[in-house]
Length: 375
Length: 90
Ligand code: SF4
Image 1: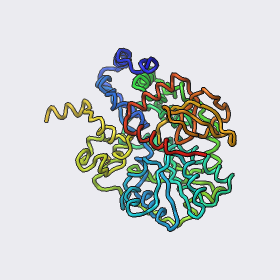
Image 2: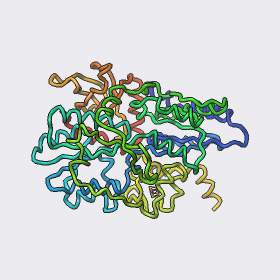
Image 3: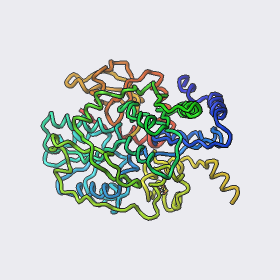
Image 4: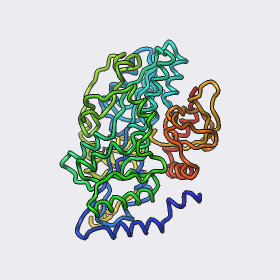
């Protein structure tokens, strides 16, 4: 554990926190958004907010791909899966995401053939083994998983597989960040950039955040000290009046990303004019569809799909949580009607969702603590 | 599915140079390394794996750090490892 101790040392954490505190100007508040659900997880798991000065707040962003799939899309997928002779395949994370008629698990219990897979390549294998069935892969995720879907389609194409297709729901992170920057609800001082997404897209796509919006971005790793270090780097920029894209996670993220992965995505997929995000509504150029050249592998062209739009449940405030406007515990149904066992909203489904992270670690943050102590 | 899992490359499959055998916490599985074609890993190298594809090469220290992060998150990692152990990429 020698390697790991370097990233967990409480002494170093306190030293970093002290340096962050020194950079705070009296009377000023600082708000940084961590875009990625993995970061949210580390922040709650290790209680990082407790290390920070009162004037520095972290807000959670939209970077949990399961959380942003809208109800209508789940309904469409279940409708598609119910076509006779069809096998739907999906990552386990997707299985409990609620649609208006229940989740994949509920549909499976009603007899629809929906199977969990670890990789789209496992779905491909199911297609090879079941030549008389149509096998569909429910493709979800940001740029971290999109290359895998693209590579799988390329493989299916090379093999000439006729019974494999993808229901493409890949989303892209940058337009969501832009939507948040353009929203009047929230004033942010900077962003903790996503780690794994940046492995693929690199750091350049964030340059507009610094250039056009004047906000610093620091791409960060997932260890507690990675995140504190990134906040320190953000504070240094704010204090110096700089806005740049910096990379704290050079151990894994190359500034230019992964060329082969970007090439695969670009070969197989193109941007949709717009796509609906749960809680955030329609965002232009925020998702990908299969290119016409690969139409033989595009479930949206092969199946009749209702394309329904379903409003989020009234009680659900996931949109506010995904935009960082509300903390999870401020949602009226948090922990009562909405729990990981009975999720109303998606932020409670994925372990990377902000609500699930709060719930699982039972961590009362300092605002909550003060609220509880006065009530 | 968002988790990047570190694995050590053991060797390539003779029939397909994009496929490599890796060791992930003692579980041996086949993954696709085609996205690292610019700088292919050799046996003994560590890679970060997302849904059956290696997305980046990492060093041994980063592998240990990534593994400890995963172990700290509990159920989600257990589920991912269980899914991985069911995986039969070929
Ligand atoms: S508590 Fe449930 S309904 Fe409320 S924001 Fe979180 S996931 Fe959505």
